[in-house]
Image 1 (cartoon, rainbow, N blue to C red):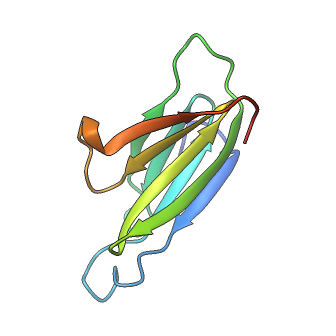
Image 2: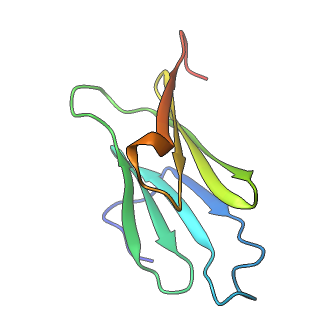
Length: 103
C-alpha cells in the first residue's frame, strides 16, 4: 500500500466474511487532512473524508463500528467525530458530532 505520507492513524476494518465471500478487508488510514480507505488485497487507496482547509487538523481516532454486519466508521479529529457508512456514500449516511473538547 502506497500513500503520499506516513499515516498517523491506522484501523483494520474487520470483514470476517470478506475472504469467504470473495471480498476484501479494508484499512482506514488517517494522515494530513484526510482519512483514506485502503484495500488489503489490491493495495488500492480511495479518499474517504477530507477535512476543511480552514482548520488545523489534529486526527484523534478512526473507530470501526458495525450495524447488521455492515462496517461503519467514526472518524475523530479536533472537536468533531464524523460518522460514515463505508458501503453507502450518500449524504444521509454521514453526519458529525461536535464536542466541547477533544474526544
